[in-house]
Length: 245
Image 1 (cartoon, rainbow, N blue to C red):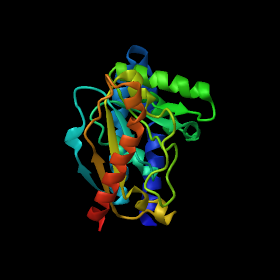
Image 2: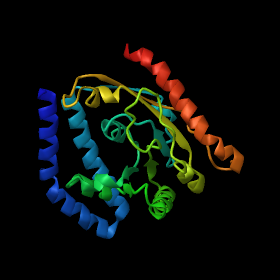
Image 3: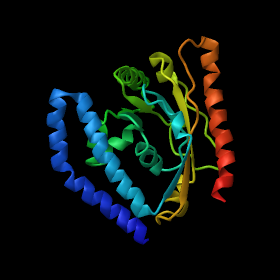
Image 4: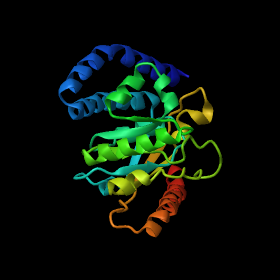
């Protein structure tokens, strides 16, 4: 329970103390939205690192060398914990915009930071909202930012390795012509969700697979891409379970 109180305490203190920095970032954004996104991510990344330290989580990373450093990508991770965003954000080598559910906009102050980092809020019940989000994400990639989307749509609370991907989740990569990097996360639910409301010291494994190129794919090849990404994540997930024993 001590870790839970410490983590919550740090989050509240940071969010309140960060309000003056939000004002500074808003001013920076008047001159350069890209600079605003980069500097905002730098601040949030350091705050996330402290939060992970307070949870006692040890992170083992596999295949980080697979992530291209010279071009933006579409990250496609599995999703079992609210900590998945935090754990992957601190590894991002370049400015990265996350696709989040519209409900995230209700989180005070943090939702402002997300907007400053070019994160997009998706209403899955609104087709027009989904199309607008895809187009904005494509625009961000073409401007040099990576994008991360959790194609399961919500946290997987079941026993299956993956929930089915939502249709159109990989459409961003198709329209932007960027590589897809499958990301496999093992053990993140053990930080918090598995023993809610306690935070437990644990080990998390994050594996970055080799990027899958999307440029030049035929329509049929792209239709088969979702199954390929899902199979990659499932295979790595089973393999990495052995590393947690």
